[in-house]
Image 1: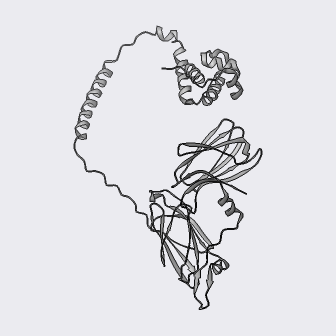
Image 2: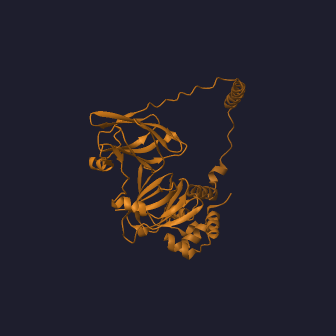
Image 3: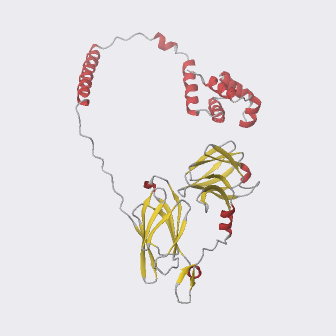
Length: 370
């Protein structure tokens, strides 16, 4: 079995590191690094220093720190001499009654084990698993928009004038299929559609699919239902002399956010979106916050040399307290690409997500937010 010193030395040499470099990176004096590898623990003022330095050194080299500490404790136990008093103690006669009791206990254990072994081979009926079936939920659009995770069968009632129209999520396979009063609406990732609810050829509702897992409907899909403003709906149709209306061409978005999204250069381009990993390697103290696939938000305070890997299917929103204190790389499709989110001392907020272009292809883009 390897000793703790051998593990530390092998890990350091495999990385091609010398004591001077490791000392600068870990702030541990060279004599203590050498003492840990040679297992000369007399160089330390006390055991807390040994354990502290060993944890820092092992963590820096990427070793299992708990295993390293366990090897150290085993080594110290082996080094402790057996007290002379224990070697000189007279041998005691084993009580006869206790020996009989042990024999009876062993025989009972053998008998019980035999019965258990026989019972194991007797076929038993398979346990019936009761799976609680999720009931579809019906929501109401009681504000300008509603954004939440929908599952197959869930629906939303959209009030329009004196009527209410139902939109139901019918399936989640290669995209979302949503039933509307005038026909089904098909959406892919990051896709959006304008829906005419009352049949007047004017778009009343915008539907956007922001997140879903292809082929796994059990995770649901993040859908946004947004009522179109009255002035936008009025502009979305042209009035003919006879009083009939036809949809007008869709106007390009003019907001700064939409312009930034459209202009975002592709990191990866593919016929379909695929999972990717964002790797953050910290070069200094930094507060880092992230939200993967629009699920729960996480936040941690990182130190120099810390590494955090974040996996996502569709997108990641990130917040960095100091853009120069972290190196960001996105890994996917067999490629690794560096990301630039800001300069020294800059607080950076950005989205890294798949976007669908007009030609049907997907591009993974970094969108910096204000």
